[in-house]
Every structure is written in structure tokens, then in C-alpha cells.
Length: 571
Image 1: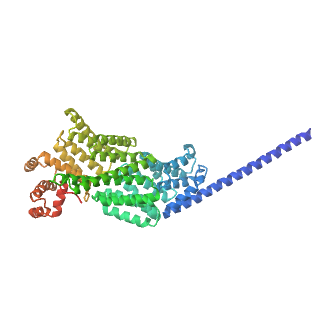
Image 2: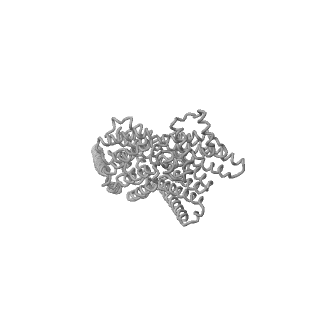
Image 3: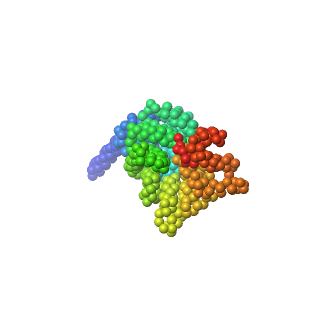
């Protein structure tokens, strides 16, 4: 019996030793596998970083495509996983796939597992959260996550991560129209990138910085930064950044009224985007900008057609027929641009972008006199802006809606009771647009809202000339020197309407009695010039040189006043 018990004990011990040995071998295999995965993650992270810093975008994308099996295995237990995931977010930013990739990777890092991560990795994941939020237009969440990261800025694992956090935060504030805060973070990001000698990241940041500086009125410095960024990136295949440079140049020259040049820049930008990713969101944004410029060029042609139609025997000439054909061509090209842009935005489920497409379509409809379609596009755009708490889009949509309702008033569409409804609706929408615009730091959006409010004050229903003058004055104060685009033309049209309808004699009588309101002497002088010079110009057979000689002023000033009065084309 003792021999039997001894035999059973020996068997159990042997089985235990065998099980322990098997577990040991399994643990060893698991450890070897984990180490292999960690080493592969670390190597991939290093190579992706090198590709980013050298601007070798195609090779980096190829690396990621070949490593999809590896990235799918990333989780909280894998060293370097958070570092690699943050790099993937950076590569999404330069055109590799989209935020859906980040969703699939973040799924392996639930909240419970994050609490056990080292602080560095936790902050990296919060940055990924922030970029993902920025990608899906949740700007508030992006800023909240980046605020948390930047509170620990001095403890971040490397300076490059701090530069990236400031850069993304600057972009988030820019989306909200908070340009001064955006510029502060963007400058800070650029300074850190320069300290760590990351030339490519520095150049990319400078592209964004240039636009913010231009918003502040620093055109020359903005163009200088773009030229520097282009010099750094010209030998890379960073087509998204290179396209951004051309797109920024297009928006800058558009501001000075150089629409044909602006369109050339936008077309070059789209050619560059197409080399990197023809479905990139920036391609859609630039298509919208190109469509907007085509519309402005079409409006210039429409004014020429209208001017010729007032002359005897000219309207039916071949010149007018050519102008009408060119107008139709530009309008159709603008619609095609917007159609393509909407396809790209829909591919990325980008609500704000679709809203901007609808807004621009609404402008085209309103130009053609299709008020109902314009109003519907504006309402849809407003709803999309409301969904994302996008005050800029909401303000633009309300400006368009007020313009559509005001068009009903001016064209007397309906009975008197209908006109009152249209007029009051236009007033309410323009006031809401003004409130929304003033909640941002977008001065031109605010100027446009003031102009829209002024046109409604000056319509046939309200005829509130004092308010219209105040609106024109407020808008004029927001339009910077050297700006010579559609906004200045709209302001000139509003001023002309006020002068023609309210009566020049009333204005002069108020001035003669010392009733100047809060105007400076320079402003009064300028308004007086806008009254006198157009009249003298008409008497002098529309000759600028004769007006200049008659009044002893420069031809340049005569032309400027006539342009402001809407009597001569700009540029």
C-alpha cells in the first residue's frame, strides 16, 4: 500500500513538473512574441519619424501599408504602442487614410486600461483623441484634450510632442475663429520646432502662421513665410503642404481683387493635392475657394453686360454675346467645382465642408435670381453649422438668408403683408448673423454682416438711413488697407444706395449745421469726395484725367473714389 501511495505521489510530482515546464515554455514563447512585437513597433516608429522629418511622404505611407498587421496588434500591454499610435495620427494628418483608422486603433485602449499606463503614454493617447476630435469637427473636445496635455508641457517626453500639441491647438482655435489665440499657439509650436531643428514641421507650421498673420493685416510677412516654407519643402513629396502654400497664396491675392491670379493659385494647389491624395479634405476646401472666385469673376462680367445693355445698340453685339458665354462658362465651372468638393466632403463625412458647399451654391442661386433655392441652401447650411456649433458657417448662412429675404422685399414679391414678413425676417436673420460674427475674431465676416444689416436698413420697407450709415461705417472700419475685393464692392454699393436714396441735400444740410455724429473730419472729407467726384466725372464726360485736373487731385484718388461708388471696375 505504501508502495502504491508512493507511486501516485511520484506521478503527481512528475505531472506538476511537466505542467510547470509547459507553462514556462508558453510564457517564454509569449514573452518572445511580446518582445518581438515591441521591437517591431519601436523600429516602425523610428522609421516613420525619419520619413516625416525628411518629408518623404510616399515612403512613409508605404511603410504604414506594409505594417497594417502590426498596428492592428497594438494595445496597452505593448511598449511603444502609444508612441506609434500618435505617429499614425500625424500620418493621417498628412494624407494617410482618415480618422476611421484611428477609431479602430483607439478601440484597443479603453478607459480602464489607460489608467494603468505610464503618464507619457497616457498623454500621447490624449493627443490622438484630440486629433481625432479635430478631424470629426469636435473642436471643443480637441481643445479640452490638448489643454490637459499642455498643462503637463514641461513633463512631456520630448519637445517635438509639445510642438505638435501647440500646433494642433492653434488649428483648433482657428476653426472657432479665435485667431489671436490660434496665432499664439502656432508661434509657440514653430519656435519649439525650430529649437529641435525639425525643418519640415517648422515649414508646415509656418504655412498656418502665414494665414493668421494675413488675417491680422500682415500681408508681406505672410507671403515671406510661405516663400520660406516652399523653399524647405520644394524637394520633398509633401504635396499636401505644398498645395496648402498655393492655396494660401490664392486667398491672399483674392483679397486684393486679383481674381484671375487667385484662380491660378487654386488650380496649382489642386494639381499638387492630386499627386498626394485626390480625395484629401484640402482638395475639397480649395475647390470651394476656386468656385467662389469663379463666381466673383462671373459677377464682374455680369456688371459689364448690364453696363453695355444701357448703351444704345450695343447689347446685341458680338462682344456682349461673348461676355454672356463667358459668364455661363464660369458659372458652370463653379458648380462643377462645388459638386466635386461635396463628393470629397461626403466621403469623409465632413459636415462643415458640406455646409460651405451649400452656402456657395446658395450664392450662385441668388446671383441668378433664384431666391427660393438660395434660401433653402442657406437654411441647410445653417442647420449643419448648428450641429457642429460652427459660428462662422452659421453666420455666413444667416447673411445669405437675409440677402434672399431682402431680395423678396426689393423685388416686391407678394402683397404688402408678405413684404412686411420678408422684411422683418431679413432683419432678424441679419441681426443674428451679426451676433454670431461678432462672437468670433473674423473681422471680414463681421464686416460682411454689417453690410448685410445695412442693406436691409436701407431697403424700401425700412428706409432707416441713420442705421444704414452706421452699418456702412462699422464695416468700413473692419476692412483693412489694400483690401480691394468683393467686400469693398459691396460696401461701395451700400454707400451709393444710401447717398442716392437718402438725399445728398440732407447730408450737406446736417454737416452745415454741425451735425456730424461721431465722424472724424477725415471721414467727412472722404464722404464729401464720394458725393462730389462722381458728379464731376459725369460732367467731364467720364474722363478721369479731366476730373483730376479740374479738382487738382491725383488720378489715382479719382479712380479709387469712383470704384468705391461702384462706377468703375476694380483692378
